[in-house]
Length: 125
Image (cartoon, rainbow, N blue to C red; front, side, top):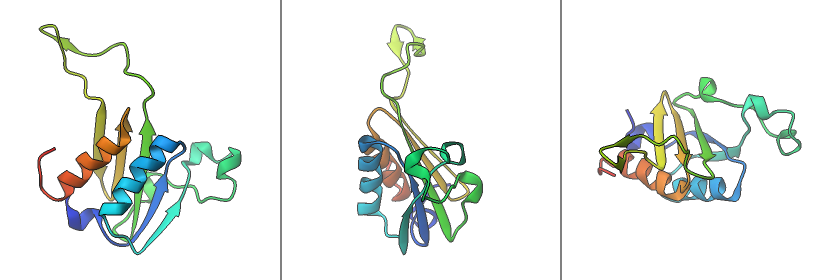
């Protein structure tokens, strides 16, 4: 369950690879305190040039002392949106939290980060 105590504190590994993803990460870091912040890459991206000097982490590496935040930008809405009664039910931003690993996904990662922050503080987003 996502709450402030489960999200804040300890070391955090940030996995982002675009300006939009970095902006979402910055939004989280402005609002939630961590003892230290480290960029990281997903293991499947370990061969990329930008990941050569970074630690490889995924949700399996997350713990209370070492949290993981993964940001995934969706460039455009998928064509296969769920349509019910002529109204789109697709959500542009998704937030998932499990075992000290926060995953933000969507077109607007600042909005997704805000949704996570509101959730951590108990405010419905």
